[in-house]
Length: 286
Image (cartoon, rainbow, N blue to C red; front, side, top):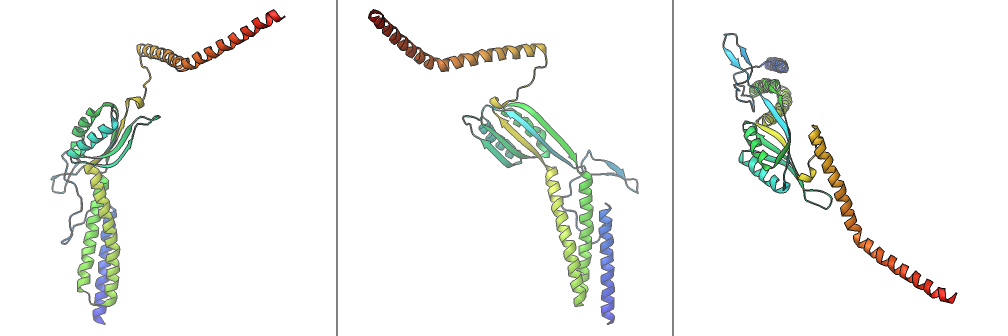
C-alpha cells in the first residue's frame, strides 16, 4: 500500500511539472533539461538579425528568418521552350519545381506556361537574374515575410514538450504499478502527439525559409498586356498605330470579300444581259 501511495505521488509530481513546462512554452520562454534534445529545424544565426544582451552583458544574436515569395512574368517567343530552360536553371541552383502548367498554341489561344518554383533563398537573386534572360521581363513582384518570432515560439514549445516527454518516460521506467503505468502512457501519448505536430510545423516553416517560392509566368508576345500612353508622343504613336490598324482591317475585309464581289458582279451582269435581251425582243412585237 505504501509503495502505491509513493508511486501515485511521483506521478502527480511529474504531471504537475509537465503542465508547468507546457505553460512555459506557450508564453515563449525556453526551458532546458538534462535529457532535452535540440529543436528540430532550428536555423543558423544570421548576421543581420536582432541583438539582445544577456544577464552577463554578453551580446546575443537572434536568428532572423524570412520567407520570400513572389511572381515573375516574362514574355518569350517560345514559352514552352523557355519553361524547359527555366526548370534547368532552377534545378542547377539546387531548387525544384513544385507545379508546372503548359498551354499549347491553338487557333484561339497563344502558347503559355506557368511554373511554381522553389529556389534556395541564398541564391534567389542570382537565379532570378538567369531567369530574366528567358525573354522580356514584364513584372517582378517579390515580398518578404519575417517569421522569426514564429520560429522561436515553435522552438521553445518543442524543447519544453521534449523535456516533458523525457521526464514522463523516465518515470514510467521506474514505475511498477499498473494503474500508474496506464496514466503515464496516456499522458506520454498526448504530449508525444502534440510534439510531433510541432516538429512538423517547424520543418515546414524551415523549408519555407530556406526555399523561396516564385511563380513564373511565361507568356507569348500576343498576350503581352498593352500599357497606356504616358506622354503626348506615345499617345500620337498609339493613335497612328490604331489608324493604320483600322485601314489594315478594312483592306483585309475587302480582300476576303473580293471573290464574292466578283461572283456577284458576274451574276448581276448575266441578269442584266438577259433582261435587256428580252426587252429587245419585246419591242418589235409591240
